[in-house]
Image (cartoon, rainbow, N blue to C red; front, side, top):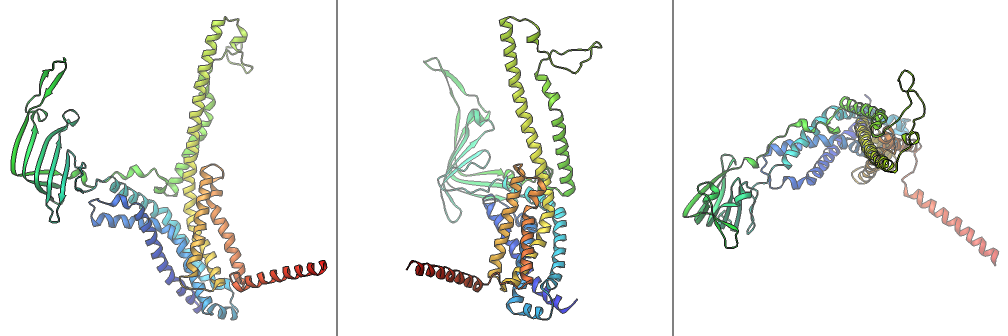
Length: 497
């Protein structure tokens, strides 16, 4: 390896590692902020958060690689240009394309890595990450009781506290306990206490509620110890009177299970249908299956619609149906007005059924086609995400040689602009594919094709030492335009005078 290649590679790897780490962190924080409401008040351990961060960090790698490649290549050649190292390389007779060659090989390796990562690691990380996220979202929040507001998330209880003190003491507690048949009996037990406290035991598996100086009211009928007495009212209606028991206490203790608040892991097989959880082989198989089903359904439309029609057809001498015109029964037989009315009613009913059948089959076919396009689109993105790393290099390296600015100033701004352009073009292509306006390959590769042309243009400008981003060039151009306008305007004044 030549010293030139080492110089270029050393100027690339440092920014690449830093940029990759920063970009992954930014995308990870964006995802975490988006789902922050699902994490609040959940009794999750450090292991759960560590697993979630790990899986989502892997998910962000395919998105971060193109941006990291673009920014690091732009910074590498920007630094070489800013410190006149690129000028010295050119003066030695070495072209810009030859200088880019070692980074091109490295970027090609990054693209290969990105492809296998998208095909093997990303589906696994998506499956693990989103299934874990679903389990966290469906986990109940931990006990968060607010002053003066009933808390109803603890199964079988409604709890209200007048005031929570700093030492954990609870003042003015009201507890409503519900039976399994609360729809019939309502609250079966009411507990009033002057004060109390709540805490968990056995690794947060059980909740203990200790109450002091209060009264406990129990509905004996609802608890099964007695039956309500029904008395006829003077109006003829009946009214039930339940038997209540009242007990005062100085210290009363309740223990309830917190099993419903723990996180339960869902079967990951429920999420494998999504295209993000499949590799190229699975995506191809699913897309082909959907398209075959689409074609078969389309073939059976005519035969399936015949059940909504009544025909009188001409038969041959061998009692088989011969090709020819269908003969309408109304034209063959004389019929009465009442029979015509029945026939018209039957025809109206049959046409309505046919319309419903047609709409159902149309919606079914459109759904099959959209699903097939969705899976095929994701299959193409396995390739486009990998190729975009190479294309981002073809944009970043010549731009750095043209701009001649290193650091995190101008390169970051330019990189963000091109990354946003890649993101917008990719989403627009996906949208047109899903709407049926473009074929899947055209929509999937539209962004890469446009940016590839831009990269080839920038390489051509870099080879010819173009002053594409030199402000003095544009200032001189504007000045020249002004002089031409001034000269023309001056000649007109002379002619008029």
